[in-house]
Image (cartoon, rainbow, N blue to C red; front, side):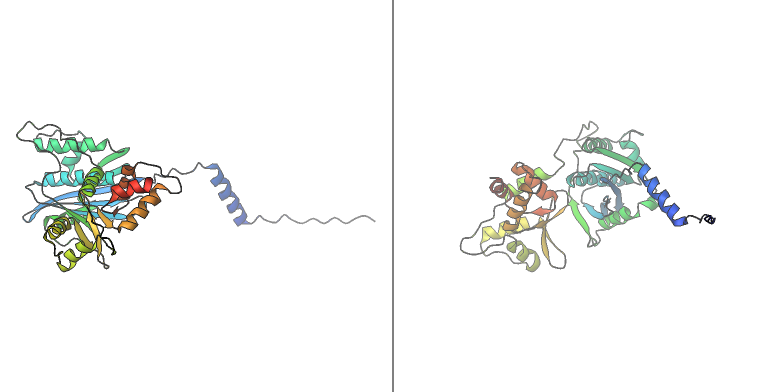
Length: 325
């Protein structure tokens, strides 16, 4: 018996299957996207009003986190000097934060042109600031200055106005006060390059830490933060006169922040560092030294890393030596 043959038309391929195949094939052929994960953006602006001068900074991290700074200027400054103070202090803060690639944006055409050598500096003061910016530029792996319209710089402009009007600093912004120019302006027309100085501010922090001594009182638990909290919150000082003078002098470098009234130390560049107990400070340095990657470094390097993380303890030198021994 002959077998019967039947014929059937071919069914159409599912459209979704074709789309999935095309997507998988395309993704496998394209090179991986290059993401500049370390690129930060900084907006800066200066302000000069009848009430005073000030500067504002806005940092945007690669992850989109915003960091705002209000800088109050307490010396005679023009609007251009206020702009330069914002730029110089912004670069120093970026260096302390460990930023290596920075996109700087400002609405002052004059400042941008002078730094980018598109125009000359006829004022010796402007020349001193300009040289300082170029000196700081070498601390970055990549730095670009871009002029933007004022409407795109409103965030930094608002912070600068808060500083110049001596208004209330927003709760999520850092603040600092400048009582002298950030560069050596010299005298007369013969202004030379600004005196080089460490921009990392770690050396200044180390010097302050070495000068400050905390007496460990035997037989009783002692928190070095208590005298400063009592002074700043309740206006109370120790009974001992010398101790009271010491606390009053050092209390000027501390602020109370947050709903929990935590103690923070204001670094030379305005960064607020969370004050931790002596035991917490020792544990932090031990963790940095014996981390997963084996951070075998010198004590001063460990202290620098701890300060960059936003922590402060008054005895970091001894703790670092103990932690690495």
